[in-house]
Picture 1: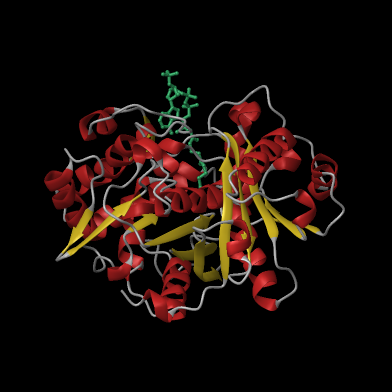
Picture 2: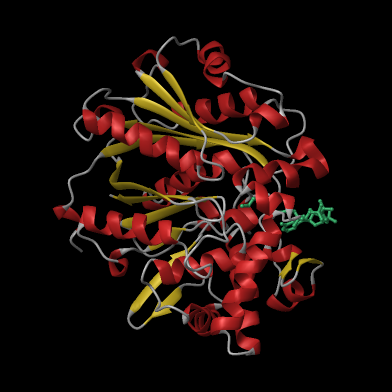
Length: 406
Ligand code: COA
């Protein structure tokens, strides 16, 4: 482990979240407030809101889902604070982008201690949400009748055509990703779905956009998550067990799928992951758990290739073999030679839920509790030192990658 070679950017000293799911009785402000309060209460040595020098919030669709604007104003009222509050919008990577901006502020020396939050309230929009989500795609894709399941179906179909060699095992692997993530969520008290689904059940679920079926998709969700970040120097003021952010990277690309060199890999994942590994002197071999943006199962497959864990076109084989070898374990790791990587130990977007602006922050919450050994029933049992969090917006127009260590 070369973790000591990495100079931390920031320390996470508190993390909190709400349940994810259909939270019809709560306003977005209430969800974010509840996550923030849980986060403040998680700080071991205590913190007062007057110690927060700035806030960074991420969300995507609040203007259409809740007829809400100027979120900083609403949150200034909820928090009773008049500090600078900044909103980031980066579709499903809004939360990751808020964290990236908070890290930049701490790196620059502008602030020592900041609150980061992410939220989304999607379920009230009912059937209109599929159209709303298309703000994160090319208008021509929307005009052609695409939805997000349709866009990812195009990517999945191409992947299976190019690399699946017509084999049943490739289709099985796409279902195994979902089966594994649902299994990981069984003991996650915050998760939207705590039900087992076999790969066979996933392959038989309703067809949404060929070859994507209902159980290949992340759900429509409400929820919020929050973190408190401070400088590495101040971390011990708040806790004896801070978790450090060792890398914070973001990459961007065109929103359109049809202009891409390839639709079977995500360029921004490659760029942000490579930059994060360079920043830390770590490689994928050093990462023990990864929070991966599995909005559709093919996205987790592509991450495993884009991050270098498996070679291009081979992840489905690795997934198939790993699932068969580890499906009876509490967590099913991906195996590559001598390395084991547990992906989405709390269920990922697939089962924990995907309130889009909250997801990037929820990922660091999960990594924080896992690295501190406080993940309850879904705790990974081997001692953990490192985690990687990967958050995607749209079909890959934006990607943030954060590497965390103890
Ligand atoms: N995973 C697991 N179960 C799901 C689910 C999902 N993604 N979506 C819905 N369900 C369950 C519901 O809880 C319900 O179960 P019940 O009958 O036991 O109550 C059942 O499936 C039917 O739910 P319903 O709300 O009628 O489904 P739907 O057909 O309206 O929506 C999808 C299903 C897949 C279309 C919807 O979840 C979706 O659009 N997901 C993608 C969201 C997205 O694009 N996010 C952005 C990613 S970039």
